[in-house]
Length: 181
Image: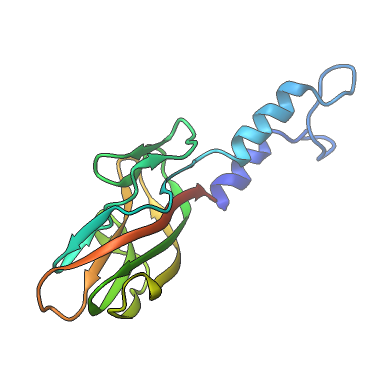
C-alpha cells in the first residue's frame, strides 16, 4: 500500500491537497486516466471453463487446466504453457484461485497457491469418495504475496494418500492476481 500511496502523491496538488488540474481549474481526462492506470494496474489471470479434461496427479503437480488467458495489464503475463501468472513489476499482490474438479477414486486431494513453486497459502484439502462426478470438490484459495519482477504464481495440487496417481476431471477453474501495493 505504501507504493500505491506514493504513486498517488503525483496526482495531488501540493498547495490544495486536491486532485491536480489544468490551468482552467478542471480535472483533465489525462489526470483521470493516469490515476486509473495507477490504481488498477498489475492484474491478470488464467481460467478454464467446465469441461471433461483430465489430469493425472501423482505427488504434487501444477494444476494443469489453467490454459485460457484473462485480460492482463502490460506488467502481468498469463503463461498458458506453464499454467502460471508471471509479473514484471515489484509489488504486493492479491492472488485468488477458484477450482472445481472430481475424481472417480476415493482419495484426498489438497491445493495451494504457490509463489515460485513454494506455497503461500495453507493447503486446502478435499476428501473425495470415488462416486464420479457426483462428488465435486469446490475450492477457493486466497493469499497475499510480495512479488518481484520475474516471479510467478501457480496452483499446485497434491494427491494426499500417496497410493499412486489419481485422475481428476476439470469442472471449471481460475487464477487471478491484482497488485494492491
